[in-house]
Image 1 (cartoon, rainbow, N blue to C red):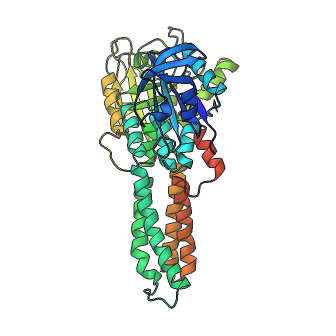
Image 2 (cartoon, rainbow, N blue to C red):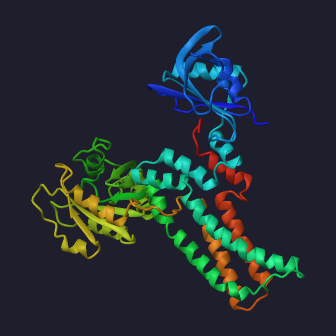
Image 3 (cartoon, rainbow, N blue to C red):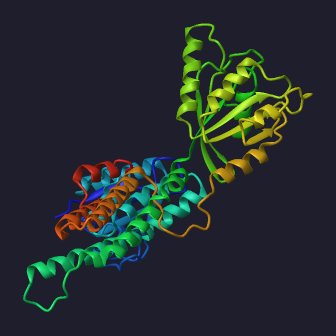
Length: 454
């Protein structure tokens, strides 16, 4: 028997509507004890997925006039009996509703427990379960579209097709081995070399989607570097639309890194504004400079900022050097509203993209948006399978390696069992991706990302 869990699904913020969910063997019975339909009868007598108007009662008193709906197993989100109460969104009312449910046999749901039950009951696979939390956490429309595709089974169908092809190879071998007297075609591993090569290519193509999928979900790690007083903090404030960083004419005002998320067009940046690069005057400033260099090393994109109203200095040369190791880097010449003394020809020797902006006037940032958008194309229009996290990429990578090893065994003329051991390893890796063979600790870690009530 599945014990009955309950949770507020809409959080505790003040809102017009709040939702409390129940799932488990006694979910409908618990709803019967606290909710009373206005047209009489009990919720257990009502049809599935029909909203019913009535009273939520604490003893003989009405706590709220609200709606309730039920879904019977297995045709529910979790695959169990479920009930949902749609209340007025007062945190007090929601809390009292939850108390009533606990008093009548439910317990507090753990984070992600509703979706975990859906997975355990076969209502979704692990890629779809991960898509649920990706959809909740989506910070751009493109990230939401990709998560919705994955929730709809796009990745699952792609993996299942590959898994099915590998299963065909294994089943043929074992059929010949286990039933030698049956009229089964002889197993020739070399005959499957073409199919294995095609599977390897499909896994390679799927693995290639990881970088774009990860960027859509988590954003681009971006560091903004420059010598003191070139306007890095002013640029950060201009991009954010509010004063996040302190801005003064005193060099070295920013002595530590400042991290913020912002959308630049369709791209989500995890932007770090760093302390100015210069010889440190004290221990604190020295730590700030080292953190700036570390941020540049760890970033995927570096935006190097220069003061257009002055010629390049030794400090600017240090900035160019710090950005030089990055494949994706942009030179941003600030203070375009002042008379220009910086010759950008030298910058173009080190940067493919050199742009002029004015943080003071908010000018030139449309060019920055275009360049970053070209560097990180969005998922707009993408309807195929896409990997969005390291767990998925690792599983596909191991599957591809095993298929490649199987092909090598075929080419070397090894016995079928040597190659098929690698085919079985590939199937196991893909099983981890979807949840066929996943370990309990991996499952627990996945659902730890969820909020309570989902």
